[in-house]
Length: 176
Image 1 (cartoon, rainbow, N blue to C red):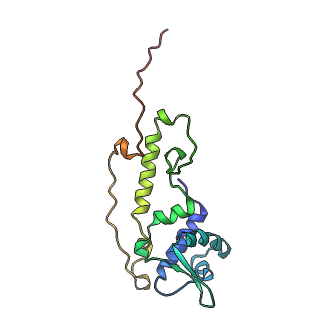
Image 2 (tube, rainbow, N blue to C red):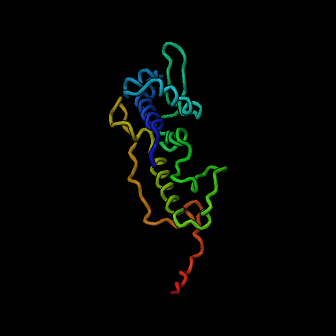
Image 3 (cartoon, one colour):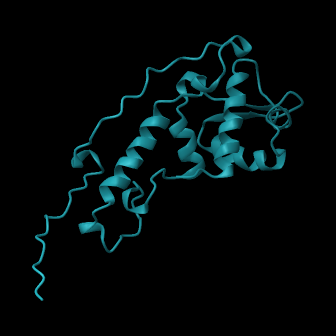
């Protein structure tokens, strides 16, 4: 899966706001300068984050944006779902209610793979907070360190989005 430039900018924006958490609002001009990003593009990226309640905006001379919650409470999966929508690698394993139905869905031999990829992406992003992305000691902060992710060696099919493989097919005899 490849994330969009919007997500890259959004993550960098959120990390910059996390670095300044508790110090008051930060202007987008300041973030653009700190991160070498386009201010115009940041103005577009910040809107869905504000709408989702991840950031607060303040008007006036000392206005700008700040995180609505502490960096330890903001999970990266939440940020990226706001910016990207579903994080599933294929539409057949999304959690979107009105998704298209694939003609092979009831007997697809690869759907379990896509469900496992989706679950791995979600695990990695939902177990990472903004605090984990702040370099140690920066602005007096010491980020929370997560234990290493534990990846299961194999997931039962029921953990992969309720996917149940089709009944095994018997090889047909080829007559010559």
